[in-house]
Length: 396
Image 1: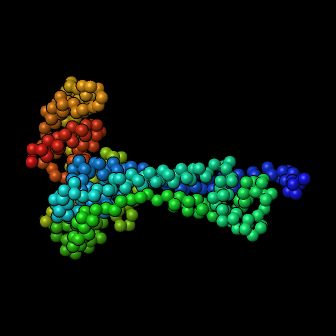
Image 2: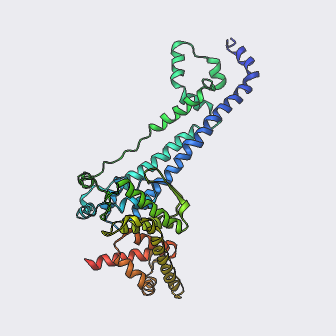
Image 3: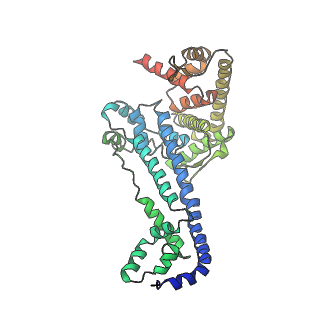
């Protein structure tokens, strides 16, 4: 017996290619729209999350891990930009940091980095879910995903078009279906939710229970007649003027509140931004600071940074030309791992006494991060970390 739908099928084959071409075009709209928006933003999100983890690790070289955990849960690291993070951290009330330091990290549930890793993994899973449904040749996958409800309804009501299904593998995608298809794909990705651990309440409580919040709202100097918003505006202006003088003025933008919104700063330049911000805060918080002279602060800070740049470069050049093997890490005796180059470290100490004296005396994370990032382009961070470790051991 000849199938009753066979004549229709045979006749329809004449126009099938034309219809399929249009289907490919509409499917392509879905592919291109999602690729340009979702996948691009997803890529940016993965970079941000990786930068957040990197900043977390950098901060643990200067602060106990429970302090950094508090910074992270407060959202100070969320931008993935070191300079922006330092904007917040430099204004954290000292009593908050001191209270966190008294805690024993062994007694705390430190979950931020693990949660951040889970979120990063979920972003990748969502990308895979999107990619698996964005093959231009897999029209049936798109149809099943986006129009499953309509598909089931048509079968139930007896209006299911068997011939159309036979020819095209599912319902036909029409022009008006493109937005709903994209929405359907978004709903599919929303099903992928990472299983995150709850932050330690003891850590959160330190910031939550501080009167007025964890951040310093103004300077300790004479701020009579100066509102908080004007204080921030003048402070940001001083920072921006200094960065402009250092040739980095066009590498970031701020929103109306003064927060960094976009940044093209490298790790080194981000560290320099943090140091500039720190210097401006120190000047603005001097008891006798005259706010009418805030316009001069930017140039003053830029000159301080330039002097430090020259000192660091000069010291590094002498160290580099010492003739010693200065590679921070060398193979262990069994060749199975890398260990600190002790001879290179001793040479490092001998040739950098002036910088290391400043480095040891400064309690500013921003300054120390700036030095470690600037010296040899950050290639000798291991030596600085060993120096900090020895300083810590010597103080106990």
